[in-house]
Length: 388
Image 1 (spheres, rainbow, N blue to C red):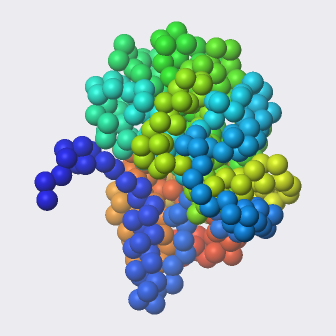
Image 2 (tube, one colour):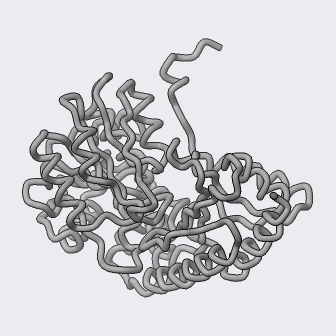
């Protein structure tokens, strides 16, 4: 089969590959502790499920506008206005099946071939994948452990050129759990404004934060016109399978993003959108409980990793991942990940799944029970003793 050349530039998410390997081992009878997949292990709150069922029973099963149902866009606009302290109207919102299309659409709409896009590395792998796919130049900015995995804004200034069309930021961040400070965002905003650069701000983990509060770069003077906020329901409301996300941006860009939606997905499922209204306007108790449980698990993971020889780990301030340093073990991290899966029955992701600067690290998702986390760490410690 003769594929288009662009297909050779398309990457993937290693988490799903490791999950598939782990499932194969489980099918053969091996016990596996899953610390690889980045999705909450909680059920979608009942009030949201009931809203979805009610919408189905009411016949909300037909096409809707490509940009999203008007009542859903209105609720999202109010939510963003309240939480980001900016004025947003419904015409600035595009609802998509999951948040990933906003990433894809924003890059397609704003970045030409040979333009440059600066993105975090280690970082969510689809950033680099899509940048490569559209024929642009990916420019990684390294997130360093000694800087709490925040990007260095002085380095960012050096990386910006006349060809830079977009800067991608993610806070709280996958895979490290790092958070950009207000000063970081202020500096990024100044760079973007001075060079007329768009910022794609991935804020999908904005509600899963343990110290401090979330800040959006869109709230800085002049930045609302230059920012695409990417957010959704998957992480906050344990709705990964519902496929419901959205982008918030200037109106003229939203119109074009909606046109891309028309050409690809047509629209987002109507009953899913109705469940989204309930998620944002209904009780938030389940979200608060989930975040509190994640914080408890984070502390368990950090304590357990600290006790394992040759491993060190920063304490993340958000999301539900840790990114431990395993350099002292002396193995390439892909090999180490395979070893932990096959020898210990513990599925983790190797750091280079998130870019070249992830070498020397593994990612552990603590979206699992405390008992399973403790068992996984115990298995890891026993297995690592065999590595001299």
